[in-house]
Amino acid sequence: MAKALPIPQIKPDKPVAGCLPAIVETRIGEIVSFRQQVVKGSTDAVHDMRVAGRRLQTVLMVFSELIPQNKVLKFKKRLRRLTRRLGTVRQYDVLLEVFSSAIKCSDDKQLTVRNLLLARYSTSRKEAHDNLLNLLEEIEESDIFRRFIGSVNTSQAPGMKKAYRNIEKFSFAEKMRDSIGDLVGDFSSGVTRALRHEDSVEILHEMRIAGKPLRYAMELAEPCFPEGFNEYFLEIKKTIQLIGDIHDIDLAVNTLHSFGAELRSYNEVAGRVIDHFPVGFLDTATGKLEADRKKLLSEIRAILLEWRQDKFFMKLLALLQGGNRFPAPKSIRAGKRK
Image 1 (cartoon, rainbow, N blue to C red):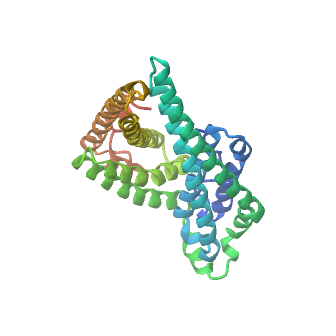
Image 2 (image 1 turned 90 degrees about the vertical axis):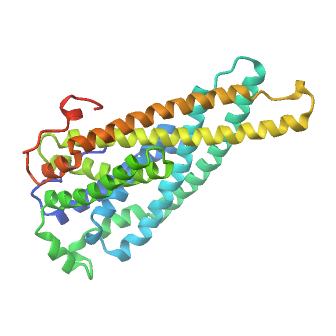
Image 3 (image 1 turned 90 degrees about the horizontal axis):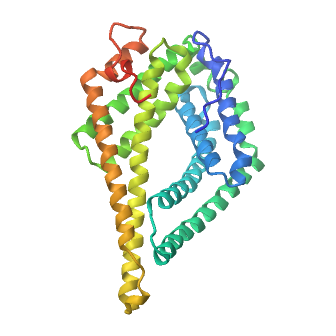
């Protein structure tokens, strides 16, 4: 994943409204920078553009009161469409990567089955990629990115002067402290639910969704806070990535189950054993993926339990407030999972 571009205009003590235009312009610039490689079909560029889109969505969330709503609503819908289409392509990229590495073949028939599976999702990937390119062309023709950059000069926006005056007195660091504090609350409640229902796919997914804006807000705010803040960010980032790995495995397992069921139905109709497609080796790959999922789930649960024991979120909130009366959590002091 490409690192976020630095934004030199961000200064902790600078009025928050004065930082916003540079933040928006930089985040949009990140999205645009991957366009050429996305058009060429690069899987890494698709992932990087999607992450850049998520970063911009977090900016729009955190600074919503400083952006005229009549300007942002249409833009947010277009951005949401872009991230969703990128997500669809990314989903097929993940499936193809998992299938290529997890499914081991020992004869020609097994190889034929695996190639059929890869061909199916390669075709689906191409269709999704074509849809993505159509949207990118539409975005470029509408010039929506450039026009939106021009709309974030909120000091001149009709109807926004009061909001601007109310928030102008806050520094960028103060705004990010309050926003991250709110996001920590959302994420920590998800952690509590995940510990109560450790194998719930839905709760883990909800926790990941709540964690993404926290992750990108912390990434943006890193220059504003004292030493140690980055370690909390890396810990949260790594944990969200682990939950994402579980999501990828769940997607692959469900797809393999469905494909295996199709092959079994075909074998029943085919009649002659010589015409049957092998299925058992797919079950073997599925079992390996499920074992990997179990290990990841155990690792995540250990992290969350450690967070609870060490009062991870209380210490992070104290750090945001400028306090340093608590030692860092054990995992951070020991240099784990960085």
